Structures are given as structure tokens and as C-alpha cells.
Length: 271
Length: 222
Image 1 (cartoon, rainbow over the protein chains, first blue to last red):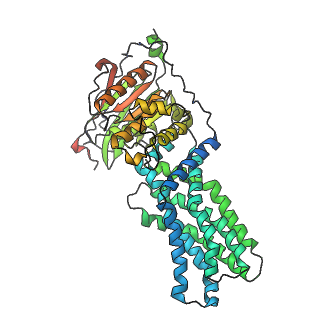
Image 2 (cartoon, chains in turn red, cyan; image 1 turned 120 degrees about the vertical axis):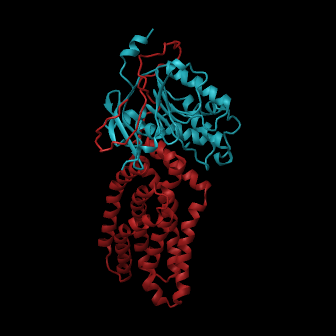
């Protein structure tokens, strides 16, 4: 019906014919019995609350992770293996090890997070639940925030818990333990938040793994630099609040901005 | 009785001059449509003719190359939350998680869209899944996955249903029951937009409006 000879995109050989759509007058006799509920602007039975939506998605993601333990154990195992291999490769000298310990722990944590990122949206994208989330009446950022928080609980938190043990293995300076824990506590959420942006952008691509690393790793570098610097400074017995403040700033910046970026990226990816 | 009011009712969804281009191929051009309460619209066409693309565009998941979509005469991008509160989209992919049980899947889907989950067991029974509530979805068949996702329809009170191939992997009995549900939904003032390659048996042909998309080989954009 509606084939324009000169359409906007200079296509004369287009034959995108569409048959006339029957927009007849309402053909259907209304036979609705009075008992059937009338559809108005549907009032959902539960009020839409941010907290409710957040908890719903969080609970779902944690349930899935608990039943699919591979996803939880893999990054943690990777972290442990990488860190324990270093003393074997470099030699057991306490001085060398304690010098490089902050870097090893942080690089391993960073790569372990990178390894686990793929799962954040990929399976949801494959089975169509991502579409359903995007079409839910809740704002996307709240659902995304819940997913990222779940991801951090599954991958980030175990890393933080096991890091002090591995630090012992690497002869980390005694003064540095608090700094190590604080930087991990502030830094690993940043890794999850920034990583989520990368995953959201690449989720529609079949083999987005390499692209994901290329996108995300540069964003991780500031966290790595300031975290290791804070731990090194702590080892010298100097105040490291400056570095910590910068990581905290990165954390709050990404916490407020990343969910919106992820939401927008997911919309593009599912387009 | 309220036929008159229906004629004057604002269309639930209307689209103006939609153009969709995929993989440098023009799927449809300047497509305008208007869907009123009580309509059952079947989108027809061979594989690759753009049926799914059209439904995704109507639901707001994809952006059209050109054109606008209105929900009750408001641009859908302007009233996203209101539109989504009144929309149920059922895609190619059922959105069922293998790691969760049938009931958990349905509960999540219902709760995500703001329904209470008290009746979910009854709804699972309506799609012939009683006895499977506590089975992990990964242990169920493809058809049962679709049924878990479709169970939501039985509780849905939203007016706009956009269903992409709802009958895939569903047995004859299930199809008949779904067709009844569609008729009922249209009667209570909702609209159903669906794609299917099957003929709708129990719905009267005069009740069904059809949108036919053609597939043409020479429509590649140069």
C-alpha cells in the first residue's frame, strides 16, 4: 500500500510491499459478559517500589548462582591459583615477594573479575529474560544495579575474604593488611560496575570476549594504580588516605553513573 | 452494547510510517497501523519478512529506522513506564531460567511485572504443569519452557499482548486453550498482536485482522 517511489533512502528497487492492513471498524461484537474483568490502565496488584524490584532481582541472581556453583568457584579458584603460582615461579625470598605482593594480588583480582564478567548479562540475553527485564515497568537502572550487586557478592566478596590468606603466602608487610582490605572493599565494586558497562555493550556480539577485555581493562587501570600505591604507602607506614579517597571517588562515581550507562548500553545491544 | 464506545476509543497502539531495515534489507516501509481495544491482529509472512522485527519495534525493544509508535496517542518513548505497565511481550525466547524451578520462574516473571504470586500454582496447572512446580526448568522440555512463560498470560490484566510465535512447541490442546484465552482477552477490551504460521482455529476469521508482510528477494539496499 505504501510504497513511495522516492523514499528517503534513495531506493528505487525496493519492493517492501505491505498488504493493506485491515483497519476496519471494530469487527468484533462485544460479547463480553459482565463478569469478566474490564481492562483499564491495568493497576498492578503490587505497588512498584524500587526496593522491591532490587530485592527481587538480587534474590533471583543469588539463587541462580547458588545452583550453578561453577560461576562462583571459577573466578575464586583462578585468583588463588594465580597468586600461589607466583612464589613458585619467582622463588621464596620474602623480600622480593613482599615487594610485589600488592601488585600480584590486585592484578589477579582484576583478571578474576574480568573472567567472571561475561556471565553478568550473557545468559540472560541468551534465554530472553533480559528482554523481559527491559520491558518491565521498573526503571532499568534499579534492575541493573541489583544484578551488579549480586555479581559483586558472588565474585568480589569471596576475593576480599580470601585475599588476607594469600597475602600471608606472599609475605605482605604487616602494616599493609588494612590497606589491602580497604582497597579491595572499595575497588572490587568499581571493577564490577565498570565491567558491567563493557558487558552490556558487548552482550549482543557473538564473540565479544576480546572486545570486552579491550574495553574494560583501560578503565580498570586507575583502580589498579591507586590501590597498589595505597598498599605500598601503607607498608612504609605513611598515610594512604589520599589514594583511598580517589578509589572511593571512583566507586561513588561509577555507582551513580554506571547503572544508567549499562541500561542505555543494554537497550542498544538488544536493539 | 459497548461497540460504540469501542469505535470512538483511542487506539491502544498506533504506528505511523514505520520503516525497518535489517542487514541492509528493507523489511517494511511506511507501515502505519492502528490497534484498538478488542483487536486480535495476526502478523503474517514468510520467514525473514520482518514479523519479529515489527513486534519488537511495537513493543519498544527495537528502534525503527524511521517512524513513530504511540501508546494511547502518546509517543512510547515519552511514557515508557506507563506503556510497559500495560504491555505484555512474549518473545521467541521464553526467558525461563534453567537453574530455577517452574514455580520460581513464573513467580519472578509475575513479580517483575508487578503481580502478586499467590496464584502461580493455579496458573501452572492451567498450562498443564501441575506436578512440575518444583522441577528445575533445565529438566523440562522446550514446550514446557514455553508453557512456563505462557502461564503469565492467565493472570495478566494488561491490555496489550504482543506475542511472538506463542504456539511454537505447544501441543494442540494447549493451542486451543490459548486461542480461547485470546478471544476472552479481546472481549474484555484488550488487544492481542501475534505472529504464527498456524491458522487460528477457534477464533472466528472475521475477528482476526491480518497484517501481511511480503518477502522480496530484490529488496536489498544498494
